[in-house]
Structures are given as structure tokens and as C-alpha cells.
Length: 213
Ligand SMILES: Cc1cc2nc3c(=O)[nH]c(=O)nc-3n(C[C@H](O)[C@H](O)[C@H](O)COP(=O)(O)O)c2cc1C
Image (tube, rainbow, N blue to C red; front, side, top):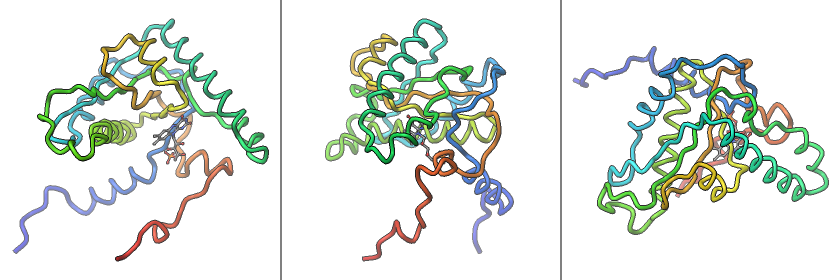
């Protein structure tokens, strides 16, 4: 006799719907999020799995206008470099992409990994030290889904110089940038990625992503 499951089929179907509708959002409404929303999302994100239970994720809520302006300037410089590096046939399309909602998003959240986190006692990461950063990525994905479930959009900005961002935010030595996140209510929900709608990339068939040995 199977044990009762904590979640029923209806919940599973809703969860699948969440996975399908979770988007990277770059177009935000100006409306602020409720004051406790970011803290609530960070608390949920902190339930993510982590190597050796190290919980190496660190969050910085960036509210200061001058610091936000520095981050935006870092993005603009990095994005200009990325545009210059595009092959000729991609450059015009790249120039049209909107690759951050930094100017509009009501909330900015920088996520770091503490490379010197003593928690976890080094368990599991001796052979693969990158598992510490993988753990921070899992926290981000958890936060992304929790945000989507609340109708909050999240945009991941990686076109940044991570050292310059760490300096701009004056974080402790040993913290390495994993993601800079924009959060806010999306202008409109979308079932397909923006990069697919713009013709930049298309979805790969799952059967093409799996080998059998
Ligand atoms: C590690 C990582 C870095 C990303 N960096 C950026 C970025 O700098 N700018 C941007 O517009 N989107 C960025 N994205 C979002 C992706 O473009 C997006 O996830 C992808 O196009 C699929 O769309 P979807 O998330 O809506 O399904 C990033 C996503 C990940 C996972």
C-alpha cells in the first residue's frame, strides 16, 4: 500500500504550469512590491539544497540610488562590449534586445556566494569546489519560482563585471557575484521566453538533450 503523498495531482499540474509560465522578465511595472516581499522570497530561497548544507548564498538588497546607478553604468559598459563582440550577422538583432530591467525594476537583489563559508565543513566540495556556487544558483532558482508563484517577475542580469559589482556594493572579501536580480510586477505574462519571441534562440527538443548509455 503506497504511503499518502504530501501533494496531490492537482498540485502537480499547477506546479507544471508554474514551470511553464516562469519567465525572465525585463519589462516591469513601476508599482512597488509589498515591503516584506523581498525578505519573504529570500527566506524561501534559503530552503534550497546546498553542498554539505553549507548555505553559501548571500543577498544584498540594493536600494541606494547612487549604487544602482553604478550597477547600471557597469551593465551599459559590459553590454556595449558584448555588442561589439557580436558576429556581423547577429549584431543588429543583439542591439535590439532588452537585456535588463535595471532602470525600471522596483527591487534590485544581488546574490553572492561566500567562497569562505565555514558552514558544511567542506563536505562534498573537495572534488568539485564549484558546487558552492551551484548551491547559490539553486537558491536563485528557488527564489525565481517563489516569485513567479506570487505574480512577481524576476530578471537575471549577468552582463556585468562581477568584481566591479562587488566593489560598488562593498561586500565582504570572499563574496563572489553569482547573479544580479531585478524584481517587480511584469508588464505582461508570457508563455515563451523573450529571446524566443525575438528570434534569438529557440527551444531544444528534450529528446535531443539526453543520451542513453
Ligand atoms: C545564468 C543566467 C544568466 C542570465 N543573464 C541574463 C542577462 O544578463 N540578461 C538577460 O536579459 N537575461 C539573462 N538571463 C535570462 C535568460 O536569457 C533566460 O532565462 C532565457 O532566455 C530563457 O527565458 P526564460 O527564463 O523566460 O524561460 C540569464 C539567465 C541565466 C540562467
